[in-house]
Length: 275
Image 1 (cartoon, rainbow, N blue to C red):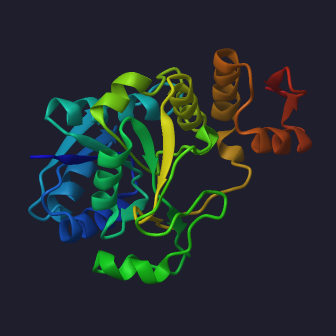
Image 2: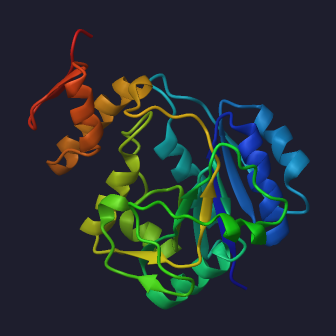
């Protein structure tokens, strides 16, 4: 029996988590779920109230003094999923809900592709949209992010740009996880760890494949552009990435920060100004 296991990392966002759990209980009632709660005791109560009859394990992780240890939390969740025998692990951001065919399409792609990072199209829902009661209705809202490939249902686009890997919605097998080696836990706080994971996959010769029909829908929350509230974490993580790979990630944000006089960035040096 093949088992697909979902991994979600959460701190706060309880309403978004409740919608995610509720829709999964309709579309995939037999797929186990690992929820990694970072310093959030309320998560267990949210899971119990909205998981339906699904098996959902809640793991706890303490915050890092520098911010949310997202890379470490994802590693914890994936290791737990593999230990319980998962043949396929789906990383799903707490803000996202899955379309009714998403897990089936990921599983089909995993059988066809061999070791690969599998990514599905993501639609960003408008502020006024509350996820419907049935996941099949989500398809009427489909409007995938224009900066990522969006194959038609049933299509696979291999040879993807590893810079575009994101853990909002992605899937991988145990063999792929072992080959890539997990997320680099030097990254703490916002930014960089997904791109680093994509580059680790590239360095390991692991393809990135976009999976048509594996749609996720991102629930609205307020954001800033550039994300000034995460400035210190982005500077720290960008420097880690540069040390590891010799190139800068999040280049658009770094240039925006420089234009605003918040950082000194010349392509070789990145540091905060006046901090």
